Image: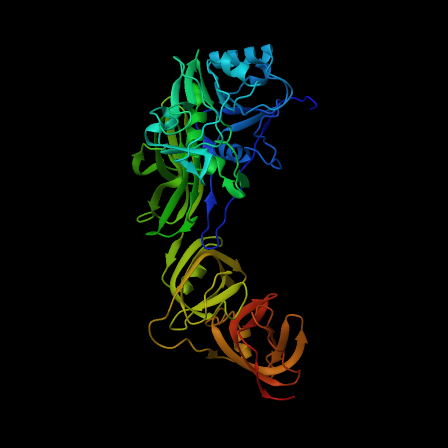
Length: 554
């Protein structure tokens, strides 16, 4: 390997978007300095940070970075300079470039003694044993087996639970550990067992993970690197059988890894914090579910709180102080009852026992509920609004990318830009962004739900001359309303066709939004067209709901 200076690689996890939920992944806003986790890559450790490697720990790396830590890949021999500024060093079963030499071991010892944390997750090997010995541990040259307590019936994939898990900050909240081909560790007066094999295992009642203080720092030693590993599918477990090695995602392995990192970070630790919201837009009375991770071996507590994005005011706490870590679970909820419409910053803020603090935040838009569609026009461009139970006159079964909704008294209607299913004749509740373009008002939906109409028939189109559609600046505007008009086809074009009625000029009939092909009638024919009043290139138009009815052939 060509030596090069270690570098800090920041890797963000992908933002998840569900089909039915708007999910907001929050950025981390630190209250204390960002801890750095160094990963030894120089010795080609078993778990690499290379995303193309079969055995890797990219998932843990990405999750640590998303939760507010930094990861530094050490690709040169370990030295005080390489470890400078780091909080934790991770070593996973070195495979090449020889043993850790005397200078490297000395650098690691000094790092730990000076307050750093060292996490060694390694099976026995002649290469790692001198390092393990120097820090006060002894790895046995063995592999634990348990015929009764294991995963997939494979005795080398040992499952530890109950009394096998000891009481320690690193095991807080850990109910079950899944070991994969683990070596065991010899008892040590200075080391505390974190997990031991069961009485019916081989060897029985023997530690597979230990922790100890080392000077001002801390060290954790585990007999396998696979607690930290990305899942690897279809591993050969003998007898012609294959099973998925779940690694970090198995049992409570992720919680164990998070606890270990935050405990080893010592006085530089801050909680791991991420958050996601069930939706980023709501209205007064709605509830926003908050999920994510708050984890620290020394967690004091976390809170949910909000304030206007303008920065005016103070943080308002939501609910109680939570004192238990949560890993990929429910952090709480924000009920918007009594919250005025506007834009807010919602955050999760966590504190630990060494004074570390971290937070994750996201913007929440509280929409203005409007009784009537006509009130949308009075809202600013870009405002978030909510309409409830408006009838869908042209639905997703008619058009692609948009629907039209209307008041039951046919006083007003509006185009809603959405890909959601909202079929003609249903009642739609819509939350979205108000858009203004000339005389046209639309809503870009961020949430659409529908329910069946309970009584009465569907709204019928209003008969109106095409000249009435064009005169949108006077009287009640037909834009957004379901209408029926007529005229003579004077032109066919790429957007549909044009009709005229006497001396009133031409009206564009737009057919390109139709879900099914709309047949353009012959030029010269007299037609009746049903659709929604709209605007097109600065003028009025009709968005056709269906193929025009030919009243008279040319």
